[in-house]
Length: 358
Image (tube, one colour):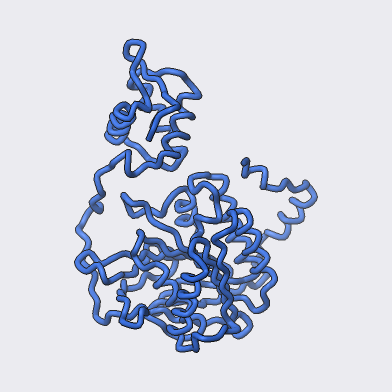
């Protein structure tokens, strides 16, 4: 599917109208975006913007976001989150893209209990959508209709932004969904908070969509397991436009609710660059990424000498979101040869075997 066809052309007349409407003037008054979410006085969420939580699997990202929603629901404090939604913006929309109705209901009940509200009946300020069975395109349309047709909406959670696209490494799709977030937040003057997994091998948010989120979000929260105690999750600001806040930590208590750990001090990070897990082209790159990159490289040229192959692979893998230096490219070529995804025939030339078994 060509996602760039989704971008609608506008006429010259429309462009002129938009151009004039977009001009700033010192004679006009532009109000500061209302601050609705804070951590210890640091602003993490304003109306008209979006933010994100990232973390590896089992880091308790959804528990953390449950606390944000609970704070917004009671317009008070939960964990270290303080919410102040305007009276006409008290409605919260929670969108889950990957869990069953049963698990979504557990999250909904947890939010209500955290907010000190009854968990045996619906709350007028919270709407929960379970969109697991739909396609990415359908999910976008459903969420868009909900955002534009829900009165008094102030906060939207999208738990699983990667499920709003078919391919997280598609620049076209990633740009499109991030543009949607920017359009929705601006048009409806709401705040959207999204959740995205991290890469296994480093601290980056996954795929091209992760790169776009890091570039455009006003805050990116990092949720990670404590290195010395796996039952503890700590929260820090990976990226924040406002003043940074002191990291805090929580554990899941006997009532299955996140509970603040007072006096927590994260393990000091070693000076210099963080230690990266050793690059493994088999584990850190998906079969689909390999196939797309190899088809791109060998679509340009049927066979390569070693040096040209290395250059072509660095460029092709970059297009699917994988950054390679010389050392990683050497490791990749070794793995591709071992798996007979590429073979050395014709003297010293390398060719692609598209029928490889991964």
